[in-house]
Amino acid sequence: MPSLPFRAVREGGGEKTIILGAGSADALWNLLSQQDAAESGRALLALGKALVERGATVIEHGGSIVTRTRTGVARSVGALRGRFVWDSGLDLGPTGDVGEVAGKIVRLLGLEPHPQMSVLARRMGVRGYAVDISASEITVTTPLGVSPPRAVRVTCEPRPTDEDRDWFWTHWGDALAEAGDITGAEVALVGLLAAQP
Image (spheres, rainbow, N blue to C red):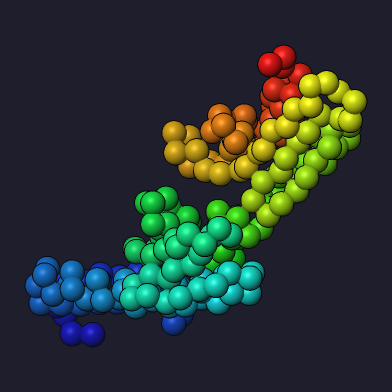
C-alpha cells in the first residue's frame, strides 16, 4: 500500500487484518464508516438466520432487522461499531457472539424461557408450590389447600439501573433478585406468597 498520511489498521490475523489508508482524515473516516456498515450488514444477516433457526419471524429492513414478540409487537435490532443494539438502546452484545445474542433476543421476545427461569421453577416446585411455565414467564401458586390462594408471575429481564444485568421481576414490576441469585429469588417469592392480604 502506498504511503498515505492517514491509516487505520485492525489486526485480526491472516485474512482478517484490515488496513485502510486515505489522503485526509475525512476520507479515512468515510472508509471506516463504509467498513463498519459492511461488517454490520454481515452480522445482521447472520443474526437473522440464527433467529429464524430459533423460531422467530425476521424481516430485513434497511440497516436493521425487525422481529415480533409473542404478543405481536414489532421490535428491531441494529448493528453499529461491532455491537448489536435493541431498539430501546439496550446493548445486546458484540457482533461476534451471534448465538448468544440470538438467545438473548428470543428470551426478550418471549419465545423461549430464560435458563434461570427453569431453575427457579424447579426450586419452587421442590418446595411444594404449583408452577406453570410459559415461554416468557413462570407463575408460582400456593399449594392446594392454602387459604387464601396466591400467585405471582415472574419474568426475567434486563434491569437498566444494574448495567442491564438480567433480574427476576414480579408481574407488579418489582425486582426480586438478580438472575444469578436463585436462592434470593426463591426466598423473596416464598415471602410474597406467605404474605397476608
